[in-house]
Amino acid sequence: MEEKKTQKCECCETCHKMGKWQSGPQNAVYGLGFVGALIYFISTASNIGAGLVGIFKAIVWPAYFVYYIFENLGL
Image 1 (spheres, helix red, strand yellow):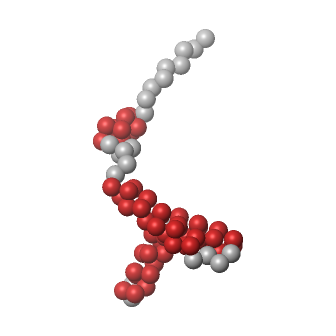
Image 2: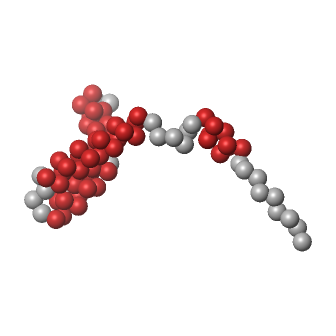
């Protein structure tokens, strides 16, 4: 029978050593923005459907933000 050697991927070890798998301050900013957007969209919802759409909007709020910034800058 052949013995299989288990090897760790060099990429994963390198990424782990460089700290790429750790969360940074950008995750905290996104998290606070998510909670704030979730509270806003759900509190302004008039029915269940609007509340569900509000949850989706809270998840993707950075995309809306960047889109409107570029739209107002004329890009």
